[in-house]
Image (tube, rainbow, N blue to C red; front, top):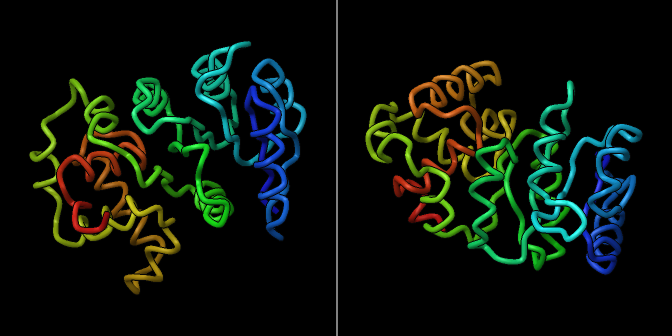
Length: 214
C-alpha cells in the first residue's frame, strides 16, 4: 500500500485528491492537511509520497519542502500547482522535489503518477514548458554538451527515465537487468552533471530528446 499525504490550503482540493486516490486499491491517503500541519503529520504518519501545494497562504510550500528534504528519511515530494509556468516550480526542482503536477490533472492519471513517484520515477506535467525547463537549468552547463556525451543506450534510458519509468520498468522494456539499468542511470547523472532523475529529465527536455514524444 502506498501511503500518501496531501498538503493543500483548499479543502476542496484536499477532499478531491483524497477521494480519487483512495479509490485505487493500492493507495491510501493517510491525511489531507493544510501547510502548517504538514511537518507534524509527516513525522507522525511517515507517508511514502507527499503531494504538496507550492503556494499556500499559511506557510510557503518551498519552506515545507526544504524542511521535509532535511529529514533523515524524507518522503518523495511532488509539488501541486495551478499553472505550468509557476516561477516557484524551478526553485522546487532545485530543492529536490520529485516533480510537479497541475491541480487539474486528469483523475484517471493521478493514481498512476503517485505509483510512479513511489517507485522513484519522474513525474512532470505534460504541460511542462520551456519557461520551467530553462528556469531550472539557468546557470548550469549548456544543454547540448552533456547530452551529447551519452552513449546511444544511455540516451535511450534517459528518454524512458524522462517518461517516468522506474528502473524496474526500464529494465523490463529494454530486456536488461535492473542492476545494469541502475549503473546506466548513475553514469547518465554523472555525465549530465545533475543530482537526480528529475534534473536529468529536464536536461533531456531542454536538449530536445523528448520533442517527438510530446
